[in-house]
Image 1: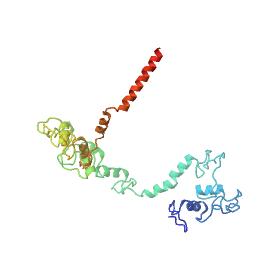
Image 2 (image 1 turned 90 degrees about the horizontal axis):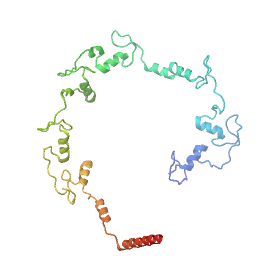
Image 3 (image 1 turned 90 degrees about the vertical axis):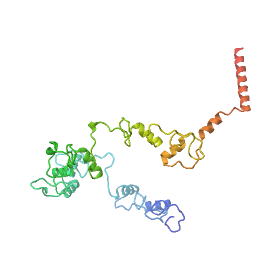
Image 4 (image 1 turned 45 degrees about the vertical axis):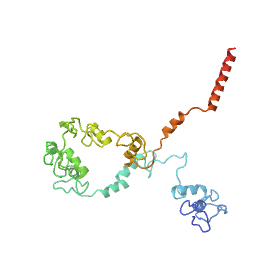
Length: 323
């Protein structure tokens, strides 16, 4: 309900006020101001002779300036008036901001403006904390090169040339070349994803695909250690044997007469189980059968009589045209 005393409007628009009182507050600065109260004769802005007050004690032009810029005394460049010239010596381009053209304003912003001051505050002064390094600090007390080495290889003194020259992965039993943090590519990704490179051996892609785990099957593994055929059997019937179980004639759900397609369920209950993990107890509506039965129903006597009358009229029309 509106916060104004005596207002019975229960729909609040903004700031705890109804739409009527909110518009009064926004336009006149007072929720009790009536829109038909006589206004002041002149705008309250010093030196303004535009006419009567439009809102908040200002004329229309000053009120729009206050609404847009927050200050009614701001004067923007009017239509048709040329921009001032850049204040930089020897530059005759139009000024964009702070009396400077776009090029000189960009130079000022990055070299001596707020952006450059922020960069100076962010960058700590002093050389790198690594002994013998005189480069400026970039982050965490290290220069950019030592910071990148520590982030990538885990050692500030290691050089990328030594790694590329044949250093092996630090995981025991791995004979691959090191890539980052003294791990090979596979162990490095394990470490980044799980926090530990692990001890499980990395499968060599050159050795060929992993065979199917089902005994006697020589196909390549597709999912769950099985080839695609055995995986689909397990997914559909719950068994990877060579001869899948024969489905029942009718659905195992009580009250359902549909034919079984998988896991002793009809198509509708099987889709429910795949989507929700439960077949549910709501009966399945058979809309298609009802529609097909309605379509196969014989025509009524009235419809037959109407068809016969239309055919007779058609024959009469044809005979009249031939005569």
